[in-house]
Length: 254
Image 1 (cartoon, helix red, strand yellow):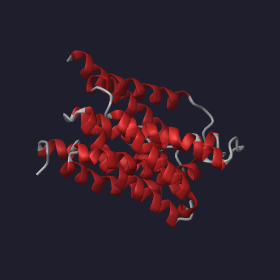
Image 2 (image 1 turned 90 degrees about the vertical axis):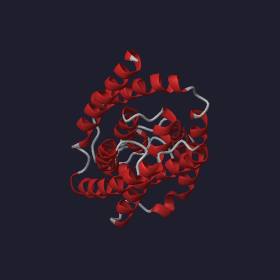
Image 3 (image 1 turned 30 degrees about the horizontal axis):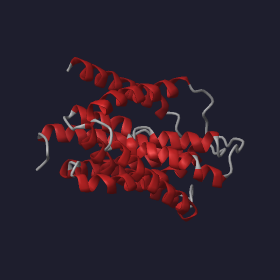
Image 4 (image 1 turned 180 degrees about the vertical axis):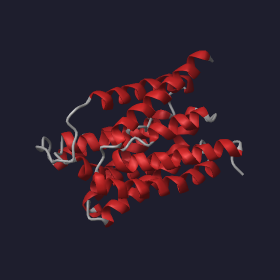
């Protein structure tokens, strides 16, 4: 049924649930699923493509959950979402031009950088901040850059969107998180459309992970709306650092 052993697929399903939970609160679900897919034997491109498939369900579910609770108006974000989708597709095209062994070396380095950022960055809260960038400028600069990164690599995209909304748009963390989800969904979808024709997707495994992602996203979004994102920062640091070290060991011991 699955492209890999059933017990391995079930572990990926569990990872997807945790990723959906984490991503719906503060972003960074790909920090869990991409390394997990690589450790399960997927090539870098297969890991990226399968991650886009299952991640689209989680980000879409979280976007709807936040919208239904009144934390975001999705129709106000349609222009940004269109930009995110196009940029995500462009990033995915770039990923296909990078040799597999190069991606294997780049991924752990980026993961370690993200872990260090979350560990060292201070002052993040749910309070609104001073707006440093107008929405139109944000849509034409930060959105395409982060979305292209999502298509090219992916892990931490939701976190980058969240931080962009906090540091540049002046949103509190909860409001920022709610506003990232449609953009993350759009960039996932745009890059997924690039991966589909290549056949670089584990469809059965990815769809099973998608079900778990959806469940995790629902649980996480509800928790975030109750207590904010205080819980998730240390989890992101530990997860990303641990997976990165494991990938570095795998890359250099082979």
